Length: 489
Ligand code: NAD
Image (cartoon, rainbow, N blue to C red):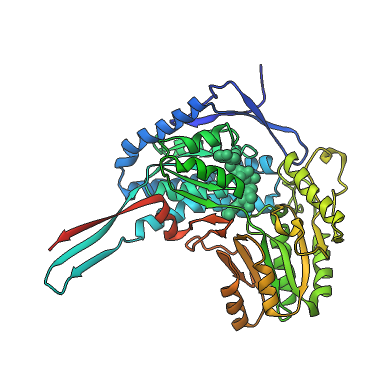
């Protein structure tokens, strides 16, 4: 008998085996051991999930009053909180991230995403205009929001529960149903959420999960499915391009949160310790696997050497090890493939003449971590601006520091990227902070902070970093159709 844990599909309120008969392995990045066998959906399974989601729209869920629907989403959040340890362990087994991150960010935000959007949907009014023309005609116009239908949710592996529920929360709050395709690297918490949906009474078919890969697999089949009415995706820019092509058939709307090559800017008048701490987090938190992280930092020349040495101390202070140990502050990267990619950039930086201030390789760890995907937090200086290490997203715990002399130069360097997701600016001169914020071409600017999120605000990028905005009422723009009704008075 096979005793390996099985991660099945969740369709129509039931955990079902994949009809393909195919399984793939989910491994723990700390040591490469097997976490579970994941059932790989066939095209027929994806079709069954979409049919279940379409049927649920026409059933109880579609008829449910907003009060009952949003109360149910509060119950989902409460149940995630009640089963905190189950979610924590599942997320940690898939990602290897330390408890200090998963327990403070991933799981609480997973729950908050349901509460926040349930409350927004209940409290946001629609528009209304009273038309009064000079020739005496009058009309009352009012807006009505209706769900878009079945939403295809394609999510990445870096913050699995958080980023998936960031889409599922508002989609369900607005009355849609969903079919989720979580990353093949991190299938567990999306599956566990199926148990939560059942236990609080969310009708069957409202939330469905199919597992698999991208091309010629569940991801592609879901985005190509003609009965998926809209697609929301977080992941790499190149994947976004493929999904956009799939969505073109049937002219289906997309919302994309894509890659980045974010810059940080540190002025000499910044609160030095706060800036070092902030840049250390933005470069190394979650082992550098945060879309909002900074891989390029521009530091005013007069403090450059001192800043570099202070950041080196931070980089060398991270503690690797058992993710459940509260002393552990850095986990591995997510997979063998990603490990090779990050180490490939480390090699290119060396070949291109970077000075390695800190790290640059694999840390020395006890034998039982030998098959894990560990990387040292790494700081470089001295790369030319055109180096691909400075233009391509690495998504690892690494940062390049470069000195600047003038505010204009810092802005020009920060904008030297086709991406436009986020930036973090450190200065105590408020006028300068606002001035620079207005000139850096990104969707999100943090001043004297990083990753401080208010879920009511817009979130998204420009250029290669995405299409559209989610967060607060902006999520409602994507997850509903706004209809106008005009009544002649
Ligand atoms: P990825 O694009 O490789 O995969 C994301 C998801 O897309 C996975 O579920 C994958 O199976 C699926 N997929 C892949 N090819 C597909 C296809 N052709 N059709 C349909 N689905 C397909 O991204 P990743 O490696 O999982 O995540 C890291 C990337 O995500 C980085 O580029 C990072 O910047 C980005 N990201 C962006 C944000 C943001 O908010 N902007 C947040 C987190 C991560």
